[in-house]
Amino acid sequence: MLNGFINLRKPSGMTSHAVVAAVRRLAGQQSVGHAGTLDPDAAGVLPVALGTYTRLLDYARLTPKIYQADLIFGVATATGDASGSPVGHSGPPWPSLADVEAAAGWMVGDVWQIPPAVSALKRGGERHYRAVQKGRTVWPTARRVQVQRLTVLAGQQQQWRIEATVGPGTYLRAIARDWGWVLGHGAHLDHLVRTQVGGFAITQSHDLAELAHAAAQGRWSTLLEDWTRHLDIPIIEVQLHQVKAIQHGRSDAWPDPGEGVIGPIGLTFAGQLLAVIDGPPWRYRKVLAWDR
Image 1 (cartoon, rainbow, N blue to C red):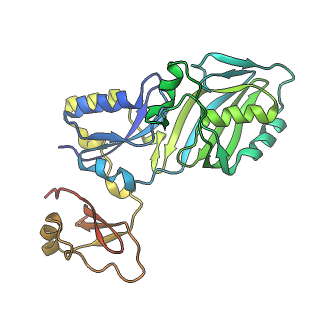
Image 2 (image 1 turned 135 degrees about the vertical axis):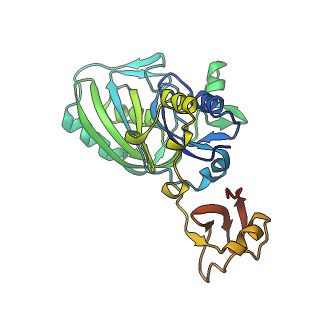
Image 3 (image 1 turned 60 degrees about the vertical axis):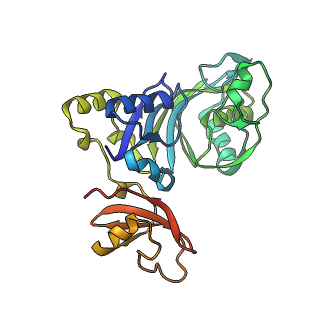
């Protein structure tokens, strides 16, 4: 079984679920998962885990998330991006660079955001986009998100290239919508690309064609990244005689983390992660297979 993280570059026009299904076929195993779903029309970094690493996604460092996109004024769409049908229009005068940058200041920080009506969020067990497809009106609940930085990279008139650094759960389509509201315009997002998720950067990413070539050549090891680059938890190194006890789930198998220490903590031997414990009181969260 293959175990590791892959810094995958998702193409536009493909769902994150379909990308994971493609990786499963190429790897010849079912144990494949991903973090940080991207909209079908969006491209860019999609962290993927294989094998036992799927159990480590909860502990991976997945922030900050950095995106680049085109902010289009003049047309508001049902989805908030270019794939949606127009639901509103606005016209000249178009905002200046100073106007666009000033509006960004209103949206940076710990802010309340109303998610787009068309999203994968659930209410009453049903995805919002499913309800919209059935012709029902959806009123998403506002939630607190973190927008660390909004930068205008280039543009003029109706179209502006922007970069956004955000925390988890933040919708870039909602940022585009709100940017337009602040300036008195309809607005939507186009050409969205995620360039970074935590330690996963687009400059070191691989597309599905590269995965297929590596699989055909039996070179998966050249694509897999070790847990040490991406896990954001402290580590305790154990001794060889403790490894077997940890694999059997014995609660007396690790050294005392010390007073005042709060989990989660990884237990390692010879650079390999064996388990994740949490506490106090200390207990196992994940126990991983030991690759001898």
